[in-house]
Image (tube, rainbow, N blue to C red; front, side, top):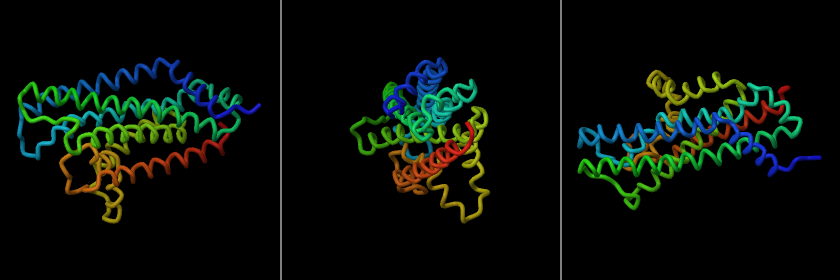
Length: 254
């Protein structure tokens, strides 16, 4: 008897929520993300106005730099936790249509990531602006121009990173390897971007922590003047990784 997609999604949700690592990771996401926000905004308030254009919204959302790795771990564990324990064979027995099983994992991962990412970004914004207000320096409100799109876009950015992590976890089947690759994508490539040949520079407009991360700002970045286009390009890249993950998952033994 074929298992419906809705039943597959429900099963994946039960598996994900039954893992203690899921709740530890989510707790870490909010504790670290909000903690970094408070510390960073205290430092920013003391340095106000600084040399750069004052962007209280962008500054309060800088915790995404660490948050993307934590939410990436969650995305990776959606897949690799079963490979580590060998339960992936049981899952494939229950859901022999591999594309359906992986699609269910993706659906659960994106649902959790969207909710967690949006909650973190709104929480970081509100906490950050409260710190600025307490120091008596200019701060932003959700109704200000560009603020809501930056906060909501930040949540979508984190969800896209989680989906990228699901794809990497599926392809590599190992938590350490997938996480190392994710670190390389979000940190190493941007760090060495200046060494790339000129014909590759266009790719950086859609790269995580570079072009796509411009969506967190309300003050226009002259290097990335179209942040939502940059984010859309990153999402296309994530979709390509997921497509490759589906192909690999269907063709190999486990």
